[in-house]
Every structure is written in structure tokens, then in C-alpha cells.
Length: 180
Ligand SMILES: Cc1cc2nc3c(=O)[nH]c(=O)nc-3n(C[C@H](O)[C@H](O)[C@H](O)COP(=O)(O)O)c2cc1C
Image (cartoon, rainbow, N blue to C red; front, top):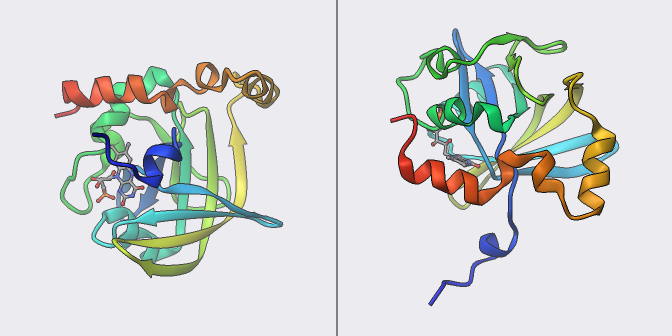
């Protein structure tokens, strides 16, 4: 019998790549993420306190949420691997990057959108530390239409517009172990 859990019901979840910076850029998929306030917009991110993402956010209080296109799925999966601290994970995965507009952290140039955040608070809870990030800049790729997303979402076709959150696709790639 399938175990009843809230996380099985509260999905699909977004699984963007979070970029952070030490000396080199770090990149990790993270799905414990969502908007929790609107004025100003605040993002909550549940990160493992042993992750390099968490360490880097503690270091310089900045992170970027990169919304990844399905075209980059192979590169995406490479970023889930645990590399030694300080490894340039964007380079290893094959992504190109550019310095953020309002932060020093880089964003992935092929991403659909990138949300630049300043961490304002942390809360250790259960097996994660929740980082609250204030949104300070939003960049959306020219080839992407926010109106189109809203329209498709209303018609229940959101997954076709942002296919990276389609769990069937993600799990298929996960099983194949792409990125190992
Ligand atoms: C789809 C997906 C979602 C993930 N979501 C989270 C998450 O929300 N929080 C977390 O701590 N780890 C999450 N992980 C695991 C991290 O990506 C993984 O532990 C990664 O190696 C951490 O890298 P880092 O040490 O460079 O930050 C997720 C992994 C995948 C594949």
C-alpha cells in the first residue's frame, strides 16, 4: 500500500536549481521551496544544513532560484551530485552563467527565469534549515511569456509550459541515473 504523506499530495513541486557562491559557483536542485509572503515577496527554502548551498548562503546571504527548461534536463541532473566543497558545479554540469544583476551569485543564462534573493532569516526545523529569502530581482528570458504560463495554468496545462516540473519526466531521468 502506498504510504500516505503530505508530500505525495502537495505535488508536483517546483524543483529549480539554486545557485550560490563560495569562490566558485555551486548549483543544486531543491524542491522544498515556495513563496510564503508577497509584500515584499519572500521565498522559503528548506536546505540540508550539511549542503554546500546552505554553507554558501550562510557565507554571503545570497542565492538565486533558476527555473530550468526541459532542454537542460541532462545538465540539471548532474547538479544533484555531491561534489567536493568549492567545485564549480555549473562548469561540471555544462551550464553557462553570468553574475546576478543585484547579487554576486551567478545565474544560469539558459534558464527560463532567475530570482535573486537575499537571505533574511534562518530556522532550523526537523531535518532541514529553512532559509527565508527576500526577492530583490526577477529576470525572465525574452523567449518566455509570463502571460502564456498564466493562461495555460488556468486551463490546467501548466506542465506543458514548464515541463521540468513534470514528475514523470524527472523520475524517468532519475532512474536512468543521468549525470552519474
Ligand atoms: C529533484 C531534487 C530536489 C531536491 N530538493 C532538495 C531540497 O529541497 N533540499 C535539500 O536540502 N536537498 C534537496 N535535494 C538534494 C540536493 O540537491 C543534493 O543533496 C545536492 O547534492 C546538494 O548539493 P550541495 O551540497 O552542492 O548544495 C534535491 C535533489 C533533487 C534531485
